Length: 336
Image (cartoon, rainbow, N blue to C red; front, side):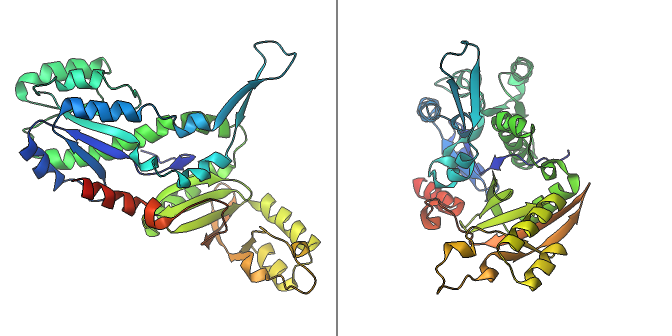
């Protein structure tokens, strides 16, 4: 399946529900260690937790605002997308609590797994139903009706491997759907690198190599705010040829040194002028090295020039010790 870059991505939580506590304890040791998972043996308690989370307004809805200009027709409304809210999501301590997938046993005393799935208020959540041989027909009907997204036999000798893979697949589907409205809006005028397969391959290799757990599309300059699993921040700047020429024009206006102009013109460095020499008093020195970053060229449908900036300036409240994905995983372990 061809990969795409969503406007944002962060880890989410998986819920596993089974009235057999021994099964839950055994399964918790076989799931992917990087997966945030909560385990419940009571369907009622689990449903209460899930439906309380459903009351929160998701990011994609918070990014859009709707208003009608005075003296205009009632149908003449303006829809505004605030992209700054995307990167500010790293300051939301609850973002990892978003539930993307539920794995539920069919045969439970309080209610069946199918009844449980029907009572989940958040329709975006993907559902995996675990069944016995006698329940397979019911599971097939539930799948065909769209009540569940997958079903698996508990007796399957490869169930651990298949659940781990299925959870990954469904989490990708979940994020593709929750970010679809932002994605379609960005497509009207977004940079072409978001759809260039060579850049996409480069991006996900970078994500894997740098242990990036979450990423957020940003502008000015175009690129991504990247957050590692430990909470380390970096910023990926992406320029096309037009951006390089615009940057050169700005550098010349600010009287950048000749050696810097040469590196940028050759595509070996990119500027990020989050401040300029004019912002400083005459006695203070403007340090150009803090604003110029080594770049590499990606030959896609057109050349892309990418620079990774470690510990970038960011006007966002963020504490990696409490807001990182690893910190969240540790908090789940304490819950037991």
